[in-house]
Image 1 (cartoon, helix red, strand yellow):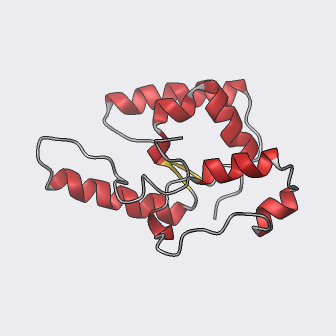
Image 2 (cartoon, rainbow, N blue to C red):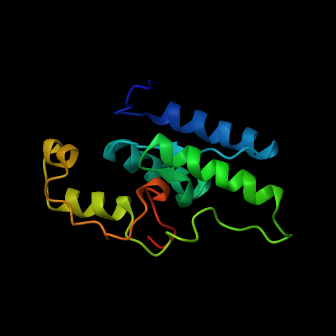
Image 3 (tube, rainbow, N blue to C red):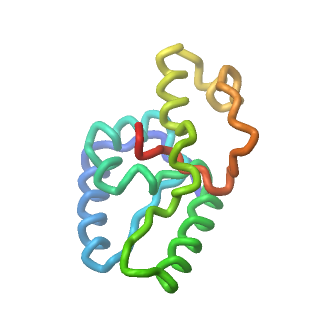
Length: 137
């Protein structure tokens, strides 16, 4: 079981940037799961969201595992052209966009955690593969 991280400071941001660079040299991709709105904002402001890639932020750990497995499988049988891990969900509204809208509407943390006030998600959505952020936002 993992504990939620509710706050990160500049030393954590720098450590994540260093880790990203080290992993990149080894062809290892970092994926982030379920960051709090405050942590996500800090990551975004620091440039880490863009550095890691918006498509590697997820709602749940299960989502990360499923997409990473699919990504590994696609690498094994892939042609020479790299493909994004979420081509089927890129056009759907991102959780980042929904969280940003909720923040503007000044919903309480309790409302965010309970899902109150969130716009309804599309019925055709596959939550197991939903990225936290879409590349378009």
